[in-house]
Image (spheres, helix red, strand yellow):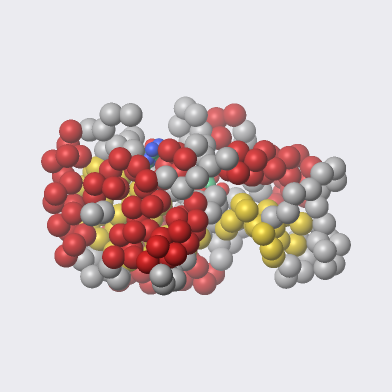
Length: 255
Ligand code: OAD
């Protein structure tokens, strides 16, 4: 995918901004995993073009038809099993290992940031902080009744049940209409307030409260830099747009 020439002009300035910032908030969305083969949600090839969120990603949909919802998540897990973190995940993780003061907040449930972080932690011989995950994890299950939460296990036939209390399990993701994990959101909001630069990568910027973090950072003095090959809702408020795929731009930006 070609990237915009303005990106090349903006890159040195963006690098300088990041180098001079003691706190950086990085907010990522589905686009950061697009080059890994994980489908995004919006746009021509996005999941919401062929599926309706209200049929598959709400508590009401799960209560109505848990089999349908589980089939969709099983399909997504199957796709994800073939995907690996890409150059964008790795350059972010390596950059974070090379400096302090960066908080990575993701809307993604695919676990690819975690996987890159673990690989880089092993490379550098120390544990790097896990990203803040606002929308949960598709590679974990949790119980609809008790506190059980665990890495997802393969299942066949009827939807899986809790090994502790036998209630239905569900994917450990945040559905539309549900509250985001309170601690994660509070930590993300703190990082937004402290940020001198807010680097937004691969999100359409239309889902709240995640998108609101960028505005919060900006309203408390951060410079907003957007990396995306297409237009986003945050563009009008961005000081700098770096147009192009994250897997191309981030390795050049985060050096
Ligand atoms: P979207 O699908 O709304 O937006 C994806 C963004 O990634 C778009 O702006 C694309 O232009 C951009 N993009 C595509 N390819 C890219 C690439 N190679 N590099 C960088 N950017 C690229 O996904 P999100 O904004 O993450 O919520 O969606 C937000 C939330 O809506 C998701 O977390 C999910 C969804 O419904 C829940 O499931 C609760």
